[in-house]
Image (tube, rainbow, N blue to C red; front, side, top):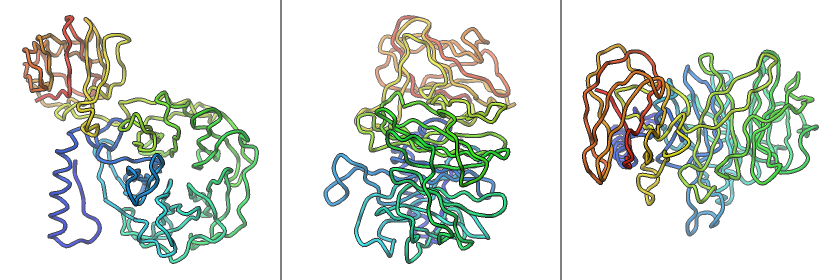
Amino acid sequence: MLFKNVNGKSRMNQFSCYLLILSAFFLFGTNRGLAQNPLILDQFTADPTARVFEGKIYVYPSHDIPASTGKGRAGWFCMEDYHVFSSENLTEWTDHGVILNQNDIPWLRRKSFDMWAPDCAFKDGKYYFYFPTGRRIGVAVSEKPYGPFKPEAKPIEGANGIDPCVFIDKDGNAYLYYSMNKIFVARLKDNMLELDSQPQVIGNLPQKGLIEGPFVFERNGIYYLTYPHAQNRTERLEYSTGSSPMGPFEPKGVIMDESPSGCWTNQHSIVEYKGQWYLFYHDKDLSPDFDKNRSIRADYLYFNDNGTIQKVIPTLRGVGITNAISEIQIDRYSAISPEGASIAFLDPAQKQKGWKAVLTAQNAWIRYNKVDFGQEKLSTVKIKTSCPTGGVIDIRIDAIDGPLLAQVDIADNTDLSGVNSALSESPSGIHDLVVILKDTKTVEIDWIKFE
């Protein structure tokens, strides 16, 4: 992964930061920031707002941290700052570091640790970062999408709530949406810092259960108001549509069902990038037993011909194309056999090291889609794997019975280590990768790469 320094630090500080980041890269594993879910492994992230600025995707999430003495409340959400991440290909992600800390906010009189879902908008050469804390909404301004951001001296007067979303219509008018048990909307002045109308409640939305985290976008003349709604026990993502930014809106359906993991919240954003629409959201991948430490994800999103949204099924594979010469984390699969295949943490005590695939039954398989083999001839596959009694796996492309790339004999070993095998052929272009266990031995696989 490539990292940038964007905060004007000295060269010595830049070098020190580079060493720290490089150390963190190796400490937290090689699948950090690759094209799979969760997108970020070295920290907890949630409530991702994705925007397209300067030809890149920028994601502005909230930043969960474990509560500790003097920091937050045990057993609850704890958030004291914001990072921003960017990518040109949705495969490699750059962490631009902390762009705002609660200690930087001049109008915040207490350490609240409640820096909930933020947003960022661009207008007239400036980037406006909207953030909630203390049930008020502040704004920080920068000339770059990654900062440095300078917070305004006062919050937005009259906007009392959380989870701001700013939508700029095609005519240049800007609107602020936020939540506080209900969803509110108001026009913004041209300066993007003040309200130009009194906030009004958006009607005709679900009346039962928590509703929060509005995100608004426009497509083909339809305005989409999307929001998390906990009708039952946990949040699912729903949407309404209208013919203007202020409504009225008509409920249309569900974008994503309640998470199978049981994660209580699921805030999100929807963005088009290079002709493809994406849903950014979160789950509790790195903290399966505590859903107040969350991790951001992304999956493809599609529309029907009539403008309705097709329901998104959450995946571990996520989005983007993986280079065959990189370490392919097949545990972030796109499909898996119904029996004999599972996923486990590499180290349950250090979950940020990532996962491994475990195959335990003959003909059990895992499929990982969209691997780019390029045009150069590849001759070897390398697998980081373990098998206490030795085992055999097939590596194929496109299907379970697709072309065989290699049949790999794994020698007896109890620790994950590298195994090399010659390829029977060298594919080119983009293919799915399928790994199949050919005997009844238990095989664990961390990653696969081609050379």
